[in-house]
Length: 338
Image 1 (cartoon, rainbow, N blue to C red):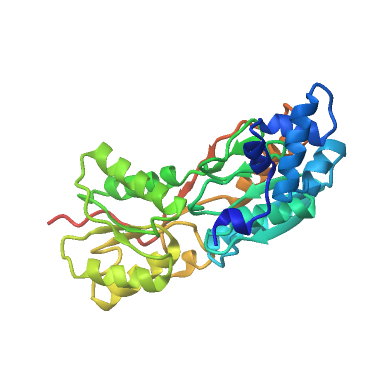
Image 2 (image 1 turned 90 degrees about the horizontal axis):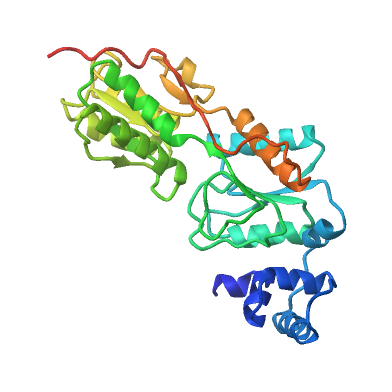
């Protein structure tokens, strides 16, 4: 069954069927003047044909507010997405908003999750899904939206975009290893479908290119220690490998295990950098050098942007990516000279 058949009809669908703009649909549904009777009847007929009912959020935006923010989330137990969700909930309460979550699954149900939130009644929507949605995501332009990455089809005057700087994080990790004298850096990437994986790989490539270092093949994992271990066994068998950047700490842990089993000393023979700074990272043997993302700062910044849109205030912060922070520990060291 197609997405169009699964999800409730939207004002975008009504506008398309009636051959008018979404603004005209909004004027008709709000009973505003300056709409001809012929256009009004066409819009109402299209709404009846599609079975469209204006959602509670759109009504609230016209008449008042719910003081509730809805979040479309993948519901992942991975450290990054789960930490961001907790930080968003905490920050929403701090600024006086209730918090509602609709889970999307593996990125395929984002439109359905958003429609569910709007039907429940929210003042704004956060799209925290960290991977390609596989389709254009369209939301009523009257509804403020916060996204942590640009999403195809999701744009407009009330859409704000911010996010963690994965490109900067990948660049910092790679530059650190290159400064230690390693000729190049191998990369264990996350799944390509995830924005974070692509951003971190891009930062790795940019750092190599800027240094004139060769770009070796990427090994792709699935964020798990097991996938990092599988990649680590490949890397451990190559005596030319002296530096590895894994796209998250869990995969870095798998790499460390594979190197230890192969008798490759860390950091004596191979330096390893992860990303996320999970709580266990500082207590590994050796402690893991990693790149930390401040999810509390991201939630604070993103919801400040969103609250400014809800309240139609010009006092919000400027959109933009937030920096990552390199945390140097014992898993990296200067390259051994041949």
